[in-house]
Length: 478
Image (cartoon, rainbow, N blue to C red; front, top):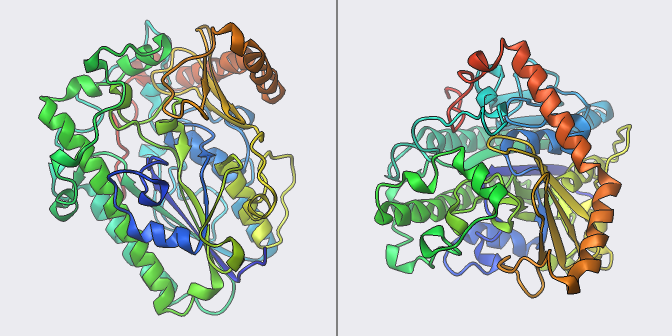
């Protein structure tokens, strides 16, 4: 692929990969993202390196696995170490700035941006320390439900923040000048609280909702690790009624349309300032959301709803012959890190697993490409690891039985094949690939050791359990 002059990277928060109309979702309406996909390539099998905000974003910034950088959870934010794609662009002399949510530690850290405009960082520079207390007999369960006390129509501090981020971006693009630039824009929707302007909620009448998949109310029993993780937060059990549960799903999809409108405004700003034809756009999210599947809300597990993310590359860097196409080679946020570096011909020392999406999309599909994700954060009594290779997906839970899914015949992950003798060879092959990336037992122990040391440094569990936002991180004043 040729390279365009500029690069705009847009990352939302908690956008499920399936919640795009161009991905075939039966309900969600995302016309602006659909138009973006028509101008580019949509990656159908894209994943996060960790299905929770702070470690996912640290891995994305550095281009390295979570266990490699040892930033395990929402109390271990990125500080600029190890150096990442932003630093590589600074070394090259490329203007690189951010607007919106970063979820790093502090505005003062050298995180790889020349300027950070209205950045949203972890709460008080420390993040969700209470969530680092993970042993089953010590975990903290906060009062109040994770999704917030109110669900329904209206404005939240997040929707107002996203509007401020879009307005600041429109101003930035109008003043960008002629020199090449890379701009990162961090939007929050559709992350909870599930509060959305009425006009978007009206797009999703309750009778249009599909049924919840494998819901516990219908008798489904979650995997023991997942059940224990879910018990650490007030999720589905916090709804006042089934009607409120349905309203929550409507609000999530409505927030996807709110997000879509904001992306449309960014594209309109590019066009209005004559930059559309010289700017490549990358859209993705830090992780997905369960939206009631299996009786789960939020993220924090390895099912597709949570660990898969949308990913679109569009604009002049995409050859006309590839525009409007899809790429089935599995990819991750780490590939976007490398794409940004390669886009500007920059370099960064060190080994990283990511590859340029430009190269991946223009080669023959590589369905056997291995993609990895891990989780060592709030609620997890042990580490969880996902490995995707071809049609097969392994979820390894340290100390628990694994799950194995054939995504070709079972894309909804209904039938666990891990104990099926006919699948033993596939299970063994995926475990071998997992151990090439890391020793899951050793990384489980290392995560606990690092978290224990951090908690001790704050004064012990009694202090740590009081530190950090109870659920959603508050945005800055704008």
